Length: 174
Image 1 (tube, helix red, strand yellow):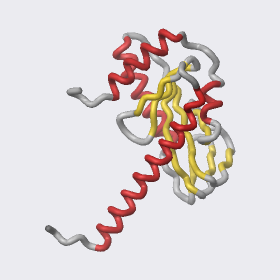
Image 2: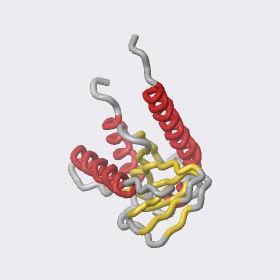
Image 3: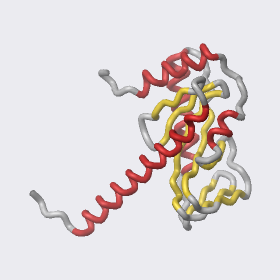
């Protein structure tokens, strides 16, 4: 068995901790979304921390970002957390676009998917201009944001989209 250096050990411990934090953040958001009711379906995305919310208000690709106690500054498409600029808005849009393409290919017609970036943490979030084509919410207000979409999709459409999304999220061979 090869000997692990202290640096490798520290990197592994940090990666495991970050992974646990993201899983915990996802679980908190999903627990909060139980308030949406039976007309909404939540499907795990195959990659990254997030999920697909399908309901009467539309189809939303929700990306979860845990910022802890750090201050978040949002200026248009740029998000700055603790001096760093992670590509959260770009990633949220990319996830939504890929999801829309996959759903559209299976359904045979265009399916719009709205990207939503959800922040979890107790730090202050400051806005100086909203990003284009991406909704931003905290975990506490995400359910209200999704319900604000109204009733644009019928129950049959929601159910069909949820079935297709569930099918796509399953690993191949199952």
